[in-house]
Length: 240
Image 1 (cartoon, rainbow, N blue to C red):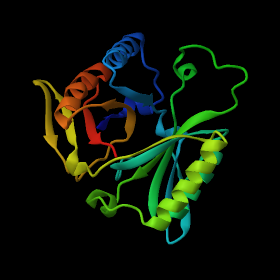
Image 2: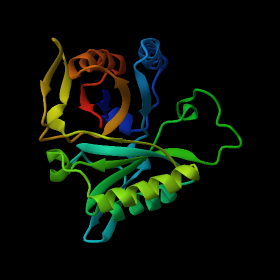
Image 3: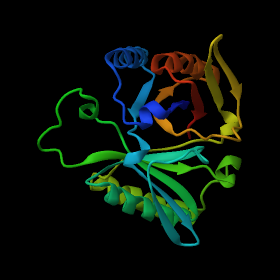
Image 4: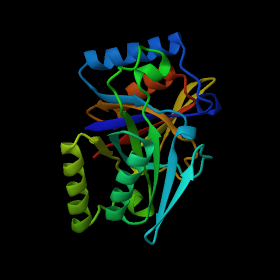
């Protein structure tokens, strides 16, 4: 089974702050431990929401809201990672996705690259960057309803086409939050409670995907993760 552990952003990171050497070292050590144990599937950080856009689709109409975003309904249902030349190019990809899915809310934010945080220079021949296209949860996704056969066909066509041209890099779908767990970093230590999560108002700052035998096994990594990143809260969700 695969699980995603997501930590939340705050005013500090939303200001565009760059992680310091101690934080980079702690996260690097945890990722190294995950890799050594053979459970690391992927991990990324995200840039501030001021660098992104929020797309709302309703009855075939698209509304674009420029970041930064105030916390609203931030419960995620899944995401894709794209490589695009611009935020506008990523927005058009997300618009095609929404055409298949119907009414949906999507956030697009740049993925943090090493040169964004001073860990090396940007290669001179790189004219693209990665973006997360994050789909928000709906009543249907929270009950576990799957897209229709026609929707799946359109999504598969879009992903196949854009994987071949190097735009689409990865995709994940989360199971309903009732199958997840939320961890909080308190003065007396890390505590948790099980989903569903009726309120999620904080934006995602970053994540790690791990392979684990159960929610409890993944939870042990979630405790180490929340301590490594110094977050107040992380969500642990099962992936399809």
